Length: 263
Length: 259
Figure 1 (tube, each protein chain N blue to C red):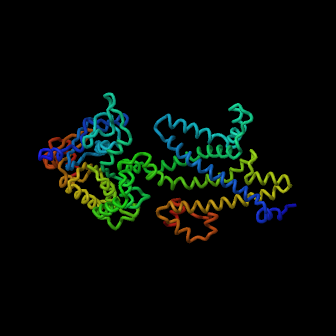
Figure 2 (figure 1 turned 180 degrees about the vertical axis):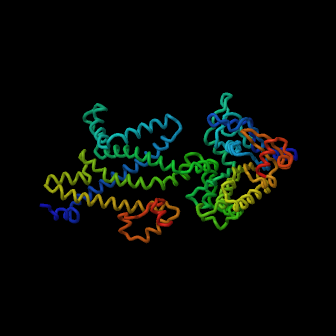
Figure 3 (figure 1 turned 120 degrees about the horizontal axis):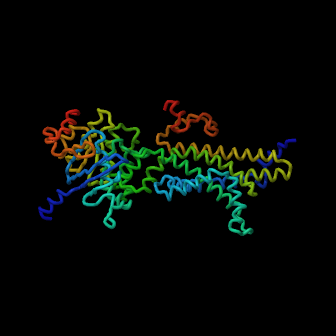
């Protein structure tokens, strides 16, 4: 592989969203949103509640259907296929296959309560990717150790704190070896003293080169970790750029107002 | 004059095991009908919850019919009505087949609503988490949703089976000699109907009590906390078998007892 090709594959777009429109009834939640996330990039999406940032994230792995536009995951059209020049919903198997390459971390953790931490982590690799159990279990123990929960492998979720549950959820997503990780306000449901342990894991992931899209209210994390900040308000992207640009030299008044309120 | 010795004879020293065989018939009809009913109910529930009208309307109509008309009438429709519908008066469904079909179809409708309630009780985030990990609907149902729904489904399912054990007495109207039919037929022939109804009652109680014990064992198994296990271990066998004051897992009683 030549140097040129290497660069190309490194700057490959892991997520590309073109003019996404999403409506809930009469309300337009996303009104022509474009997004591009390159490999290894950490993109943080900020904005007031109701601005559409969570919906954008959910559209990326097709937890929400979109009303217009296109989303590509690593070059593949997500959720739809073209048929006679029109977009129709893709086959379930294909949607599931692309989703298995995208890690999603929920605000409410959504761990499987009838399984231990370890079982949560090994479930999808065994039953979706059909990897051998011994191999997956070994990897799961390593992942739990990585998020600092090696000794909690056999604990059920209700015995874990919110921060511990969220770290298991991150390990569960990582066990699929995703190409990209999406974090939907991963620390918003946590008690303040537990936020740090989850952010630490996310920061470590970013430093290891994981491609990430992070919806968050943690401005410190955004400033420190991310390479690109997107400010959304009222269903559109108002302004985007480097953390320095958005946090210190925002051009748009809405951006400045929002940051002024929460910083 | 009430003949205690007749009761005694049919309970303990009947060389023909008349009631034991009748109880066996009652039991296996119940088990088979309940089993088919659960499977049927699962598919009906999934159809009923589907967003596609061609799936959910047939399920709605089915449930509406089978919950809205008496089981006795459904049995008779199948027994007497089927030969007329297919216009062949000589055709007669075997009595066992007729009862099993009618009971299974009827039970399917009730189980559909119970299963639906169970699935609805599972947080929507569970399905989303499963999907986000690349699971397809069927796999997510089997591995993630149904195991959690089971905790909600099992207690009313236990009620249904308890009912089923007793509702099998309807089979006697088409001449199938399960417990009630046996008591009626032999009792009226020998003028000991009251005595034999007592014998039948004892066997019904035996079956339902045994089932109550099995049910609490299953519920206990499904409780990840296994808190109920500790509670049950502190109780005597009598309270377990008869269910006096035993709290349901997750029920108000469990909370009140300082879990």
